[in-house]
Length: 409
Image 1 (spheres, rainbow, N blue to C red):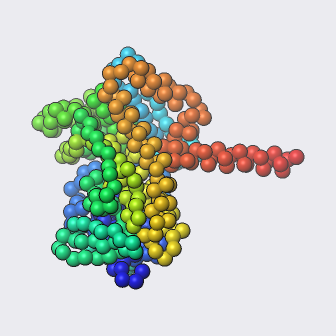
Image 2 (cartoon, rainbow, N blue to C red; image 1 turned 60 degrees about the vertical axis):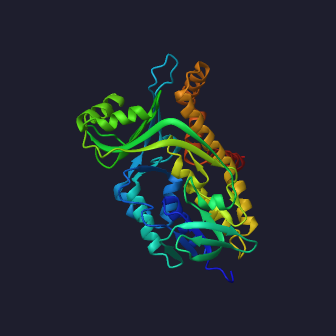
Image 3 (cartoon, rainbow, N blue to C red; image 1 turned 120 degrees about the vertical axis):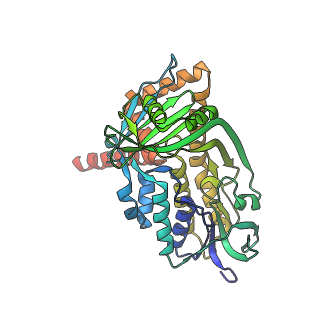
């Protein structure tokens, strides 16, 4: 690595960037983390439902212990068709115990997760964090040169772009991106409720978008409510009692009286998908590579799978962390997962907004099959947690049966 300031520079101070820095360092690489102040502020009221593989990842990073007391397990995932249409899907509950898991994952406040990841960064000697923004990157044959906003220049073998949908890392690598907007805005808040949630997360599908309640410790839940922008503006204008009543009504009083809501935070919804996820000496993770609406707890989990696959590519790399074998392996491995998740979330969201009756019928039939079809339910649940796990589980069961048959003969 002669002449380079670090093996790897990770750009971005969100949870995916912090996790990427820790993952790269775990493979013996020296890392510079460009994470300007305010990248993960304490005022972020959002929470993230991390599935079991993501929880296992942060456990290996030594992060879970600082999150556990603030996290709530997700033992049941409920999908409710609340569109009011003639053709509607049956309400369906998915139980973690059906696939021999105690929970699908845990819901964690973002500020807690970010603080725990930052603590791990601070405790890793091979990571040097710089509180400066990136201005540009030049990718050369044997290294990348980064220019910072203060005029300083640093070099590295590999640049990891975790710098969001407007990624400078991606733009500097001349990687094109496809973008689209949705006629929706998401509002995020948390609230208390009179009844126990029993660790059930409920996603109500409405004609304006999903309304997703996710458990927090105690009689408290977080909420992501996707609606038309004008409807969100109307919510922002009402007093606390009216807001709580609106939330309770949308949940059909499932959790009883709603109280003590946090201040609403809002985000207009859009999507993006990079044409490549890696190029020579450049790798994209998280929203620098893909972004889509908050449906089915896929966003950050997809970003953490990016991080895992980056680690897998580095594990097989030569001394040069930015060698073409690393970027080629990563790009190839991420394509199917990212395309499938992005397409599925986009299709589901558009199906809620569409007035096309055959699409409603297909959605209702699909959910009906999931409600009553045993093998299909299992595949759906396992694939929702970790891509490919349902097929590896099936292979394992077939192998066990073959071994049992052989030993008994």
